[in-house]
Length: 311
Image (cartoon, rainbow, N blue to C red; front, top):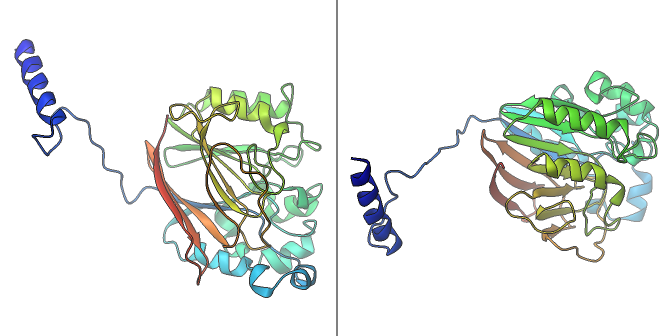
């Protein structure tokens, strides 16, 4: 009987390969992703100071201080499981009064499901930690992890002058242990300063030890902000080379509302770029993969969609 299966299977394979049969073979594995799998959104570089004066004097109104419009996008998503902020949540320096008067009135409407990360404009983090409380992780670290559905999610601190990121750092040791403990099929990590970027700030090489550990551990997605644009990279290895098998796909989503900035030299692996549209990254987290969609603010047409499988 086993030999008969092999003969039949071979014959069917030949038919499919020749295009004679139009439907998939009976032995092919198929999986349907559920529409009820958790949805998260991510964005960074968000809220202007309460007065808005610095930004509005420098740029037209439509090009600055759109935190209310981007938060409206997230509020329109039914059943949203979590909001990941990618740093620089509140300009200019993350003062608690500014958080309460600006961020809180926009993205603060989603505070109960927000998992933040700290940017360079949060200073030493006093206002940041005071505003977000326990959700921001321990004050001396700012890195932590949690689960969303079948996914393990890791928030890291890329302010490496405040919390070390090098190969001997406590943060890297914690990350290595966390990934070894939570061996989920699908894993996402996020922080503020992107490891690879075509934006104004370009690559952030100080995060290389972190990226290397994520790559070795088979992490699937990395999200960052800092550059005030949207950019999607092809899956990259530890040296920034395209690796479609084990590489990490990364997104820069510095489009939370503050303002836009120009691109610099375009880096290898950069696939999609935009710096004239505010918006959010929407991710549907399936048990074995994910869907992404850049959702633009009202009146804009740029978008970016796709799907990926976990390693």
